[in-house]
Image (cartoon, rainbow, N blue to C red):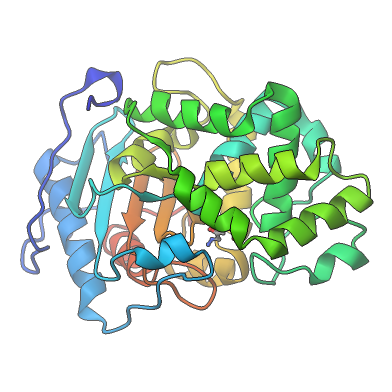
Length: 341
Ligand code: DON
């Protein structure tokens, strides 16, 4: 696999994260890609992972999608990508996993890039304060989901992207492949089928919104594209690289512009307030970055103007966010001061 832009800065280690190396940790907080050496960035990843595993908390692997229950609860990886496309990782950072709701960040970016602000008539941008699969607000709020990252909101975004492109899941897959430079990124069809088979809540939400006229495509098509983009498999390296356009204020790996600077700012804002569902306040408090989680155990966080960080560990907390992943991000931003605050 090639690095984005053909850069050769990808460093790797599969060793157990160490606990005693602290380059970069005691220096003035720096900027990935400008102030920090490769060695310092590599050490930051190791140290953040080591800090996370010191806590005994591990969470539980998602099992409401049976195919996800097979994930190894001990898996743990982390990657940091710099604006210039260098990537540093440790642990299981090259192990592909089911991106699940992390894909919603990319569907939103594409829907806004292709269709503009009209999207916001069908989906809000306020935190829901409810679980990602909750139905309760939909009736009182007339079939308009609170935000694009809860499942109901993501279904609306998928519907609009399907209308705009004719192939919503294909558009998300192509964006991930192009930005990561990894053509092996693909949809795991058996995970998508497993979710479809057990997707009664999502189907209920989609039909409910269709009843309010808030879907423009047949419910079955919207669900199929939603399950497919959630079932994309990628590793920490791929996702860290793929998210860099948000750190570059809308500019893609090839230098072309996907989003205006203002659109990128707005997506980062919605990620901060809604990207980790009813734990978004806790995530902002601990990590202080825009971020998106998925029930496959991935978390992708954005350091605007600096880089991205992706963690993966399948043990989830009650809100559906990776326990070790959030802990590692907490440790990284606490040690470095790399936060939007
Ligand atoms: O629709 C679902 O339930 C899953 N495909 C995605 C949920 C998810 O990843 C929530 N994230 N923490």
